[in-house]
Amino acid sequence: MARGDGRLNHDLLPGEKGPQDACGVFGVWAPGEDVSKLTYFGLYALQHRGQEAAGIAVSNGEQILVYKDTGLVAQVFDERALGSLQGHVAVGHARYSTTGGSTWQNAQPTLGATASGTVALAHNGNLTNSFALRELLAQRTSGAHAGEIKHGNTTDTALVTALLAGDPDHTLEATALEVLPKLEGAFSFVFMDEDALYAARDPHGIRPLVLGRLERGWVVASETAALDIVGASVVREIEPGELVAIDADGLRSTRFAEARPKGCVFEYVYLARPDTTIAGRVVQESRVAMGRALAREHPVEADLVIPTPESGTPAAIGYAEESGIPYGQGLVKNAYVGRTFIQPSQTIRQLGIRLKLNPLKSVVHGKRLVVVDDSIVRGNTQRALIRMLREAGAAEVHVRISSPPVTWPCFYGIDFATRAELIATGLGVQDVCASIGADSLGYISMEGMVEATEQPADRLCTACFSGSYPVPLPDVERLGKHALERPRLPITPVGMGS
Image (cartoon, rainbow, N blue to C red; front, side, top):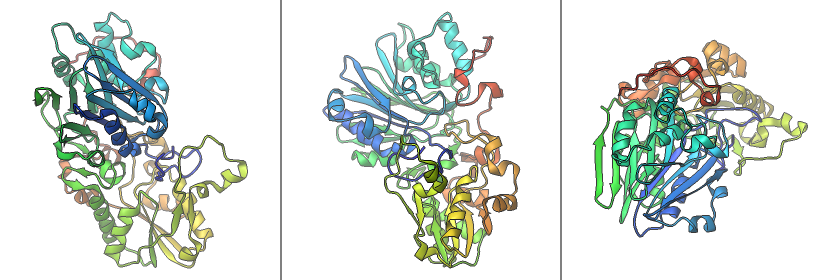
């Protein structure tokens, strides 16, 4: 899917699928502020994390209203829609589907009844024990569907929302402290009832979540860039295993699990905005450092370093700085790369990548090029790009990748291709180089990538590169984006201890 904000992702070819982003979540508690518009602009800053659906829930202290639909943030909301969402607390979501299909029923925030009111929840990440949670919910509700599940929602988010229903003796906060330890996998939640805003992060902190301060309130968001756009100052990250509650009594924090940090390294490589800060490190700085490491590890005699826009740009800058080879713009992208519902004709389809990217022939002709990108998934995009550069007159094309070979799928909130589709799974570096038609190919080492993040290796999840998953995975039939849409497996007793 093309990014709706005009940025270019790996989908340069019709039908080609690259690493799809995790979702973006945003929450605000700010009496006296226009919380729906703050949430709208927060989601706008997080549009790169999901382009399938968008939604906002707002409470005025008595009731919660939700407005959501499929499409981009700017397509879903207008002044009239935002004007109807009045209140003091809001949560919002920009979705890319990692559990459940891309349907209206699966748009977020999800709604559910609680013992004393309503809960609206937005989720970034992916739970790995969804089947166990579904069985637990069935036991609690005597097998009946609950909440949005009975209306066709097939996401792990709807399961959590239904589990938060609680009982008359429990507040939402108390129920959350019972439910959160039962969840396995990756989750960064923002949720709310009629009065309060809540935020929670899984014990490994796989997906990012940050806390910000407004003059008259608080903000929680997936990335610091979303705090910047609404004028909030960064306070700190929500800690792994922490539940934060914000209401008229102020902010309070409770730990529901011991922190075992394993932040997603792919956030540094590709997912997060370059102007976002993660664990004290500006993402742009990490990506430039990856490019420098790449130049040290895989030098080559060349005339020009060019990026695959936009994802390869920071690393290409770093490669050029370290190598001394001039940096240049050899490829021009269409600034309005967005969803198109018009299928290209066969003639246009054959041009493929040129719909979205075109070489500057006068720049690349006769040059030995270093082309820098963040990752190779299937290899089809790089193959088409190299062919196009050679047709434009490039003398040599040397490909440099600012991450190690992607050989394992992610089950924590990124929708990669299956392992069988990942080109590096069955081929060595030289074989991949020959397959894409490059003169040479170099991937950054795991050590070089990790060092660029300035994080200890044992605090990062590198599963998509190493196959080492920090959260144990269930049987294969209980995994995958559409796992909850398959016919139900027999319900068996499941231990749900923390």
